[in-house]
Length: 244
View 1 (cartoon, helix red, strand yellow):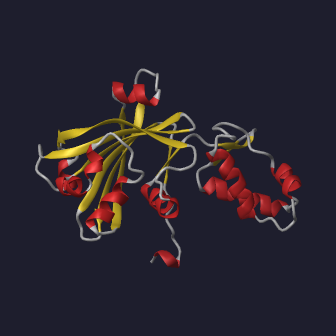
View 2 (cartoon, one colour):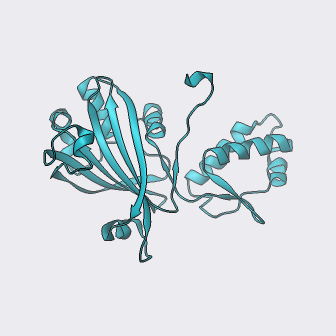
View 3 (cartoon, one colour):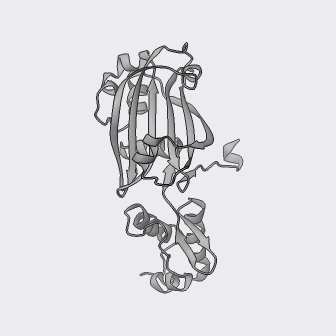
């Protein structure tokens, strides 16, 4: 390897290996000395690359072992929006989405106030299981109001659109503006345990309620995402002057 390789390239290489499943959750990463020898870099460069992976939630430090690949991660909406803008796809490397059910349901006490409709109002639901490298990562139930389905009838079909919110926003002619993500914990239902491969008796899952609003303040989607307790929910927020 040329001596000009930088920490970002090293981090990108290991990031790709993790996303492709070459390095799996629990695998031990090469030691800093091995990284230095492989890439012909100083330890400060190798250490900086590993800090990037840690800050992205891809690795963790395990006492007595070293740096290991973290458990499954479920990306937040900001990551998926940026991914869609760059690639035209909302799924990351190694990810797949299986549609379990589509249909019309009455908005319950969780969904109705977030869609700003009366309880019982018919809304469209799409239930999906997202996996990474064949391992279930999260269940997602996405709910859409009537004005979204009117311009995006594809969402009423059991086929993947590649980016449901993006398609709806484009058809409505209004960009996505903001998202509220509310996180809580609860016990898994029997169906959730089955789909996520959770076998313990009482299993606690993380639930993320995501409300996405367009630039004209209309809600384009409310989604309820459920992940197993070992799945990492990842957010990254800029705290520097560029965020003010």
